[in-house]
Length: 154
Image 1: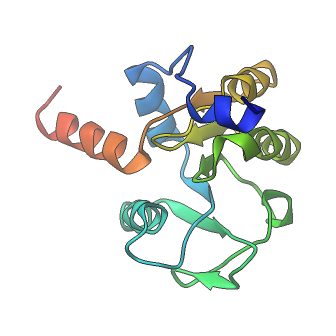
Image 2: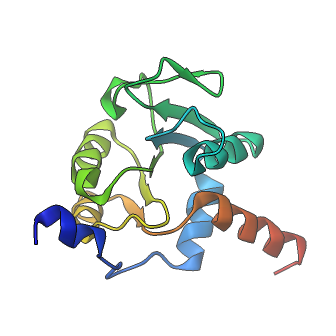
């Protein structure tokens, strides 16, 4: 098996707690969405739109697009001017390590790998550099759970 094939089948060896996820969602609002699609039917587009509608500052990262959701799209994380807090990844696991290295250079606070995306080595690297890591979770779903819990008084 190639490295790429084995990484597609990984499961998270460690995972953020529910409290960690709530902390990330409430503390950090500037989110670079890596692999954001201009197509409204794609998960990355739906998640980014939802986050925008819930007061998050979304920064599209897609080298094939100039603009997505009315915002300038950047070729890479390192091309973004200014601060990035959360790096939300919609890319295959085999490219996550490169994204993590860019996030470390950029001074990001959180690596968030969306549902179906797991790279334990990249997660370990991010944690070693002091970043929080969430793997195999959807920001939209986790935010909706948090909001529902707040409304229910939990």
